[in-house]
Amino acid sequence: MAVDTAEARLEERWRDILSVHARTMCEIDRVLHPHGLGASDFEVIDMLASASPEEGDQCRVQNLVGRVHLSQSALSRLIGRLEKDGLVERSVCMEDRRGVWVALTAKGRDLHAEVLPLQRAVLARMLGG
Image (tube, rainbow, N blue to C red; front, side, top):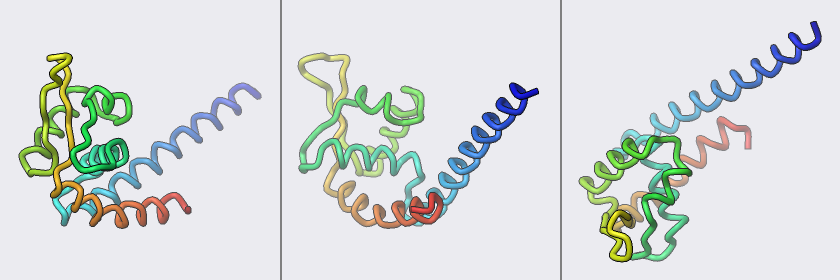
């Protein structure tokens, strides 16, 4: 019986985590939608901004794959949309032709700076921080 109770508590904790995550992502989507971004778009832009703090800095797409909760193909499509919107630029890695670099454009950096406080406010509100 104790095992069942421990498992039930573990399952409940897991479901609570999933619920908080889903509600938080939906709220981030809602506040960023007027700016043309979703939560996943913001996560990639935010990672690029922190991984490459100087304008012109680049990040390998492969370095983002393990940090975002998207498949490699979904991440590639997302980066393609961001590129189409003029927020990022992609280039081929000359040392390894299979590698792709991605960098925020000035427009991407400006949008990131504009929406960062909105995303952080959602996190503070939803996560109680």
